Length: 92
Image (cartoon, rainbow, N blue to C red):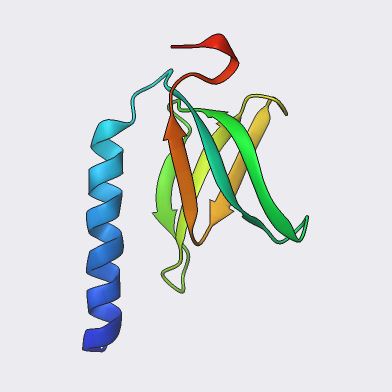
């Protein structure tokens, strides 16, 4: 692995460690990201649980799998995303 890719991997790993320790089961949030399927930026209401995770694609793209409250199903966002924690659907 070249130095450039290694530094990128380390950055993603640091973000992964940071978020992994902060998110707790039952926590609600809003996540915004560009959805290729819809061709635009979307915002979803999410909830963190045991099946949710941060991970990386084979090409080291950051991914997050979360539970979509409105769709009652799991979704995966890739690339850049923004999270606004707490307060969705009247939850604390």
